Length: 417
Image 1 (cartoon, rainbow, N blue to C red):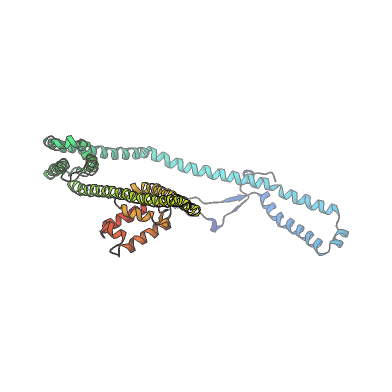
Image 2: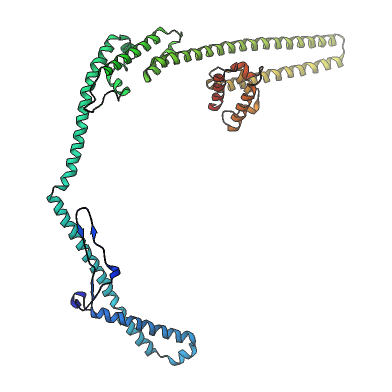
């Protein structure tokens, strides 16, 4: 069983029609391989012996399972040893099978590699590898040509742009970023094209003239400050304009900043009026407490003069109770003021002092105190707002005058709380 395939080549050839490999037709070549195996005589002998040895082993196992006692009486070790030796002789051929399989795989790999090497040599001879580089070079050349065209055309636009910037000096004074041509290019990237047929037209120069003129007009509106905005709001408006330059934005945001400023001032005045009212009410309460204390003191004095010990005792008890009530009331008022100050401070930024009475309404409803952390409470407050809008005398109606935008702002504040 040590004879190799090469030594036994030519003994037998097997080829199954079902194993025929169809030729492959590619764009560059046709490849046709016909698989054929010439078996060795030893391989053929082993293939015939294997079924016999398997049958003999199965027969011994069948006899044993059918009647183990009778099998043990009749079988001897020599018979089993002979059987094992014969099977071992056949199974030793497994090593030759495995080695042959590896040799066949190596042989086929070499055939494949030779075929591909042949094709690669043909491609190299035709400069195929350089085609991809040449294609990449042409693509880059096309990009460079378009970039050069765009650069030249931007230079044509630059002349018009800078002439306008020099004409409208306010733009460079208040918004120097917009006077920079590189920023203009970022804002209008499609104004210039690298296509050969897309030359700069008169309409392109007109676009530049109109754009810079509109920017300058917007800067003039900001400088005039017809809304009477504070320096802080003016800086905010100018920043928004630089980010999105347009006359429409300046007009729209200028009006909105004015509305916001008026709302803040109104809120401040209302807060000051509430503070004054609270101080007045506190003085009234203090006067009432002082008058009550004087009345009790007079009673105590009368009781002392009348030597009425019991009356004196009751008066003293009343005085202590009044003092305790006064102390408790003062302490409750102090704690309430602290709690309200903390509550108001918590929502001061959120409500921008635009809805002060609604803040107090939230404060007076303990169930709403966690509106900043509970989604359920936010939903409850928003539902409350929607219901109050339907009533003329509600807090929400007085705060918003049923202005849909203000109602939406109030709801947005609750969501952002």
